[in-house]
Length: 125
Image 1 (cartoon, rainbow, N blue to C red):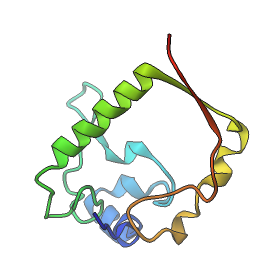
Image 2: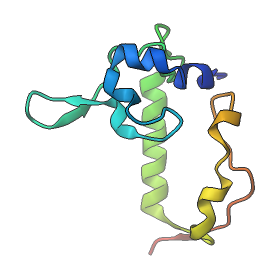
Image 3: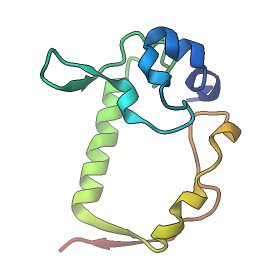
Image 4: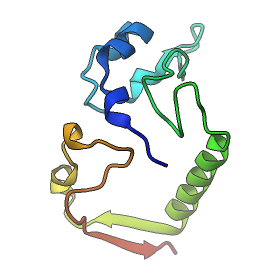
């Protein structure tokens, strides 16, 4: 999958037109609450309505991938098994932020660390 995420993810007018509050924090900053909307006085829930074209997920926009739910479920199940079976410890947790690339330099769908990240994995008992 090849996704041009920079243009859509950082296009401020598109986010502002969909939901004005989404640009209260810079778009190049991670802020999961961007996708939360009030839930009839019961708190908040994830909602991507109105954001078609501003956020690409498995094809995004008006052209959703028909296998997106299956792909997400596989990812969630894999993570659950990994976390359930193994412990992961970052060797140098203090400098982890140094391996994240500058978001403005990232043009396509996946973000890779700028250098190797040391970690220890061990099977849970």
